[in-house]
Length: 398
Ligand code: GLA
Image (cartoon, rainbow, N blue to C red):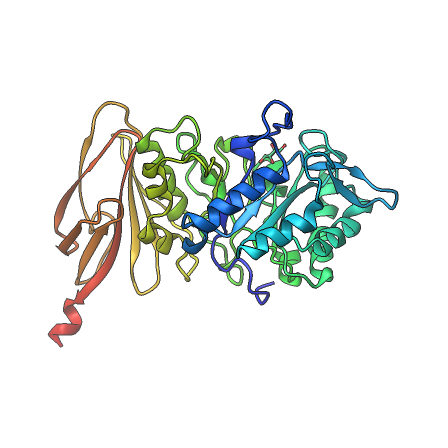
């Protein structure tokens, strides 16, 4: 599993669901209905507007693409909305240097009621997706029993693997088991699969307002580098980025991006890239943010501090002894002056640090453990630092 080269860092891309849902009304809404046109237009934007070059390469179809099964039982797309078929779309997406993701459901029906991938169809569907040259499969879990899931998800991992095509496996199993990943089982199965079953807890603490402390901060060895892609309905926003979609303020958008990044969560946007604002593009295309999200150590950050004042601090260890710090405010009143020091945040040792504010670019220099600093955090907003050691005082004394 670790050797197939896929998803060594959180996947980045675009996914239809949060923005376009199950809009199949192509007669009245041809520009926004789930159709090959929508995916081709998003692919064009991803290639032309800098997304692909920043690392956003997966273009993912979600529910409501299926038209039925043919005489031999193979899945078929809706012929009206995907008249040229999925291989055509995959070729188009690949010609632009992007990857195509698709959606299926380990159960009788997809969540929106389209044909599901029942246990007897798992192998056939994996083969179909591989023949179509699909690069990622999201396997949802509506309309299934716990027993079917326990058999079906590992079966799909093995079936994808057996196709010989590297296909990333985005696994919704945990979302259907109360949100807690059946980790041992996934780990075992995962370690035997090489289809890119690459799952962690990263994404489950995703909701800005409701999220729980990430209770599975770091995967134990040997799975530490595995990033579990999963959804948790209880935790509200799930793992799709809502930035640029309806409903988030600027501060909330910045907070979402920072929290996803500190938690090493996937960066899967779900917004209309044809109309996204420059401000939201800046958030999603912040180079330092993306560098932190994609840090090769692959360690998930966690909350290290929680104040009665509704301020929380998150920390993610990064390569080269750097770390990311996110100061997050759940307040709704006014910008809050938060006083702290690296010592109070459990940084020890005689090291002088420098920090770069990820959003403003400002450099804060000469930070030692005991140096008091103040960050001003807007309501529902964050201040995010990329913190790196400049000098080790103990070593320089020797
Ligand atoms: C479930 C999933 C969503 C989306 C829909 C599609 O609700 O959690 O992400 O895929 O199904 O119907």
